[in-house]
Length: 239
Length: 304
View 1 (cartoon, rainbow over the protein chains, first blue to last red):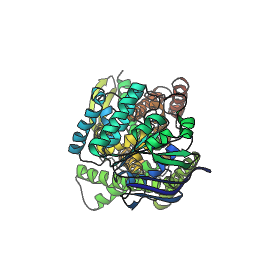
View 2 (cartoon, each protein chain N blue to C red; view 1 turned 180 degrees about the vertical axis):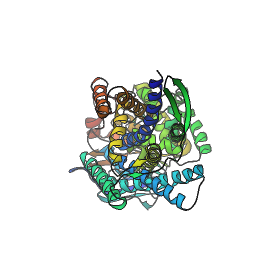
View 3 (cartoon, chains in turn green, cyan; view 1 turned 30 degrees about the vertical axis):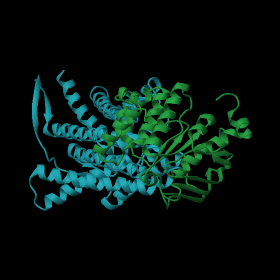
């Protein structure tokens, strides 16, 4: 099976600081792959580098067999990749409805309406908040909106950056089960970045561990969960 | 009373022109957080383009004033838009991601370039133009004083309102407007949603420049004289209007424009013409001290 997304030897810098030190990673079609690691390991940088912002300095990123390493962000995102980024980045002075429409930028309005109904089926809360401004939503609602907005472009690959951050356990469970359902039902491929390693590894088919900008471990989710060094580094002290 | 009414009419007319220019400042500030100091000079270029078009059309024998004005409007707005696009492409885009002051300095440079270009190519002398829309209607008589509402003033107010309505519709109701607002609120996220942010920024400059050119045409028709330096004073006033209204806010820009127009007119009428700019800018200072975000500004804008 050929990978939907493949990173080989990718490095990235923020100014003079090297954030990624030669990352190799693969995501196959229909998979949920998780990337776990401590704060500052470079997880979010990796997600943004896939989207071309910052651009990878060395190495290659291919998506669906095409080299996207040097493409501008908007061109990459129009090929079926969507990201729900770190910090959610909801447009604060736009309504929930407009935020969702932004996700379908460049798609015909009739298609956007249909997709929006699917998003509402997944997150009914968004329908209740439709005309409310994005900035006034609760954290959990904002996260649902960020994921919903990403789904509006009908992506093949969804990049999810820390969807559980700062949310109540019940909301986290709801969001994770939504991701699982999407993956099962539509075959959506997901690359999930998480600090909540336990939940993420249980959800994912495979996982990678990122330490200081480099992949140190990889394997099936259940296998990583069982490793003592993972338990010690990422799981002790509560799930 | 009649005198005050007359000043009100004059002030609103002037304020509308300031408002049209201020929209360009506030839009560009909103989207990339820079003050486009060359914007006033785009307004000046728009006034010159209008003069050239009107002179040319007269030479061609087009005697219908509405037709000539319509052609001039399209011509001036179109070419000024090209100027706006070029300025952004040449002087600002290469500096994006550079340190904060770089595009600001570059903007001042572009302002000087445009002024000198027009000064050299059109001459430094004041260019007069005969009134195209003369006359008006008397509104009220008070002793020897008659309140006049000129057709020109009506034309200016109507044109401005139509432009602002069209622009508001564009920003609030169309996908392009939504993309512009998305870039304004979170440029990085807009890119992640597949929006070509560079193109959206370019379009912002293009639209702002077109509005400034319309203001240039109105200014030319209203005052009948222009020179290469009008962009500086009008630009600073319109910038003040944008800050007064709350920079980043579109209704604020129009409101600020009206405020500056009225302050200036009333001050000139009741106190002294020489000190009218002092009055406008003193009010700006007071507003900034007591309402740092302007009349309609948001407290969360912290880009500069």
